[in-house]
Image (tube, rainbow, N blue to C red):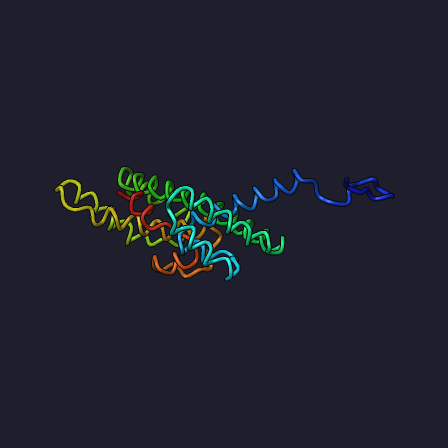
Length: 204
């Protein structure tokens, strides 16, 4: 039977149901870690001693064996301080928010590209009002080239280049990374966790 604090009347220990909920919460966190790519995992404050157990759970695909390995991982995770697990959860939440903002920005990039191709200088003026540091001449040239490509059924090189230029222009501001050198995709991808395949799909 659990004891109570004489002054507050609160229970002094944790109930079995609370223990079970905490264990299931850690198990769910372990499943999230196993589902991440190596690059995503590397951005989290995961203790070194947990990494081999995560890798092993990734390797095992047989259902029962996989569940057993996840339980083994969770057992090791419960030995970590609560502060360590909270730091992992906070980092995951931050990455999720970053991903949502990035996806929203990719849609804006696509919208701006279509506006530029449809309305030309009018759309370009509106873009420059919002992003005055954009290169007017570069974008105007790319838009004209993209329109010519479409008219002549040529490969959409300029069309793709417009996407990359707009991505470099819009994404740092959306993620609060205006100070980051975003002159190339490599610089930008080093600053945020981007999904290259997703970007390529978005521009096709």
